[in-house]
Image (cartoon, rainbow, N blue to C red; front, top):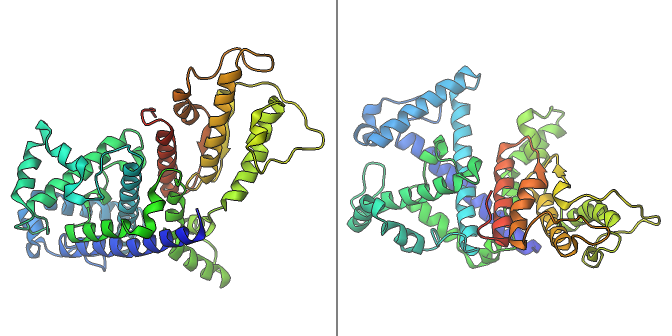
Length: 389
């Protein structure tokens, strides 16, 4: 991935954050009456809350959320800002994830053509979605007090159902039971976001092999907080626990990641198997003058831990290396210097085995954990679309 594409990803992320945060804040104020100063206005002034059961329930949930945060010592204005940011981050990552899945053929198109996307059309044809089919046929008008026409409601439900299905495998990112899920971008903003995501200069970012796009999105999203924390640090202010993640979240260049992984995990493998063919593909591996040997282990028993995993950049590189290790063991099992039996029965089992047995990550930022899970999900499904998590 070159610097030009990385720059386009950063620009897209910053623009999208601004758009999605503005949308979330305007929904809170204009639809549900949670004002920017943290107070709640009378519901009688808000038609959506008065006339739509769903909006009324959201207003109640917002009040409960604000109260719970206040009990935990967080002022209402601060908790409102926190929710706005979480909503923007959540929907940015979910929609990017769905776009990347489209490119890998893991889902039928759900976003690229909005209401004309094949996945949506097929979903409408299913018997259990007869209500949504009727809404779709009614068209985009009239709009209800929340700003949605019948077709928009059907499409929103479709996107949420896609998230529900994916939550079984990537639960943190796609769990729709949280408040950000209920602040779904309204039709005009959703169309604007998708058109921005489908710009020609970003086409390569979503394609198979560019799973690190997720990490660049994460870093760009945190750029504003990082700048603020850095400025405070230079003035002698202590970094708060909340500021650690954005301040330290710098994406490691790929060549450095490869060098570190190839000279740790790769070197370990070569020490166990001095004749390994991996020596021909590890461009950054540096043989030691006195290469030692290690006790033989099956590849499934080799653990790789990144204690500050971020968006799992090191894990993605390690995944590719583990994949080659599993294949080599599969080809050589039973021969001298190799396990009697391979760790997997066939190459199709390798992606799932790597996720289950080998890769581990820890991070203080739950957002990073969300993206790590997504990155590995895309990586594994890119190798085997049927592999299970």
